[in-house]
Amino acid sequence: MKTERIYLRTEPEKKQYLQRAADQHFEGSLSALFDFMVERLDMHLDVEGEKEYGDT
Image 1 (cartoon, rainbow, N blue to C red):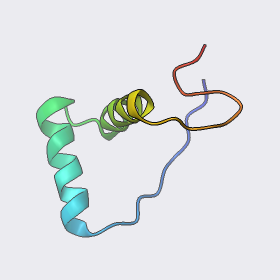
Image 2 (image 1 turned 30 degrees about the horizontal axis):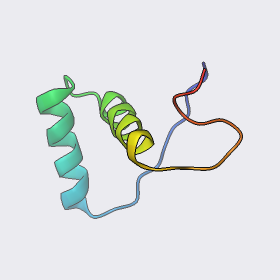
Image 3 (image 1 turned 180 degrees about the horizontal axis):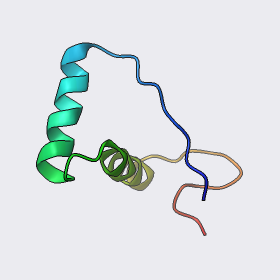
């Protein structure tokens, strides 16, 4: 699987919050934090498209 960079444009406070959450729960990995966030969104949102996130 190929990975891509995501450029996050938000307030510094929100970036700091995300990094603290990653540090406390995902050994500092923002990638793991974002994977967790996407999994949770997939459970709660119906997003249309060719393939849903959790599909194999």
